[in-house]
Image (cartoon, rainbow, N blue to C red; front, side):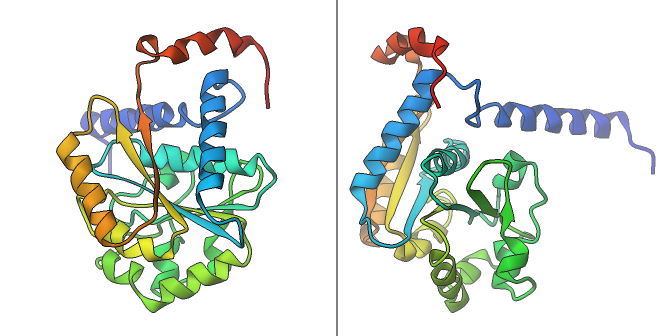
Length: 245
């Protein structure tokens, strides 16, 4: 079937969007102060959760488009730089992002494992980032909440925690669906992502209320998309010429 001009334009826009999203992934050309902020966040997280065994960290937001997925990946990369064994799981089974960010096919993934269609070994894959494995979302299921709350999910987390030092879970927005609340029982700690000048105070307060009711261990808030020209962080720009690992 011949593609229409509209289809071609849609594909072009999709490729541009994917390229734009991937430009925010930490790499050798990432600004020095950004890398330092992630390292500071890494240190704060390490001091906020128990040090015994595998640490399982959830990342969520109150609403969509606040930056939870790109920060999940960047945190996984930052922790892996300590030579830690890191796994990133895309638990946003309705609107997954990690397949797009990592440039992989979403399936097989966590939904396929939960449905008994794939094994963990088949679904967990290497990434292009040292010491970072990924378990993508898989095929979009009709019953994501039921899958994530199942006994099979508990067994999968238990099995994976024996292999990795850190597991990061990219969770759906807390005010949209209940999945993050359900999964919070597996977590050592949970990070709430807030987007500067976009997130609403009432929405954030509602998300925190839901997490507190679930007795989730909220270890901090990550503010994204801050205009550095209006903050003290602008002074770090001068360090960009130094090549820190």
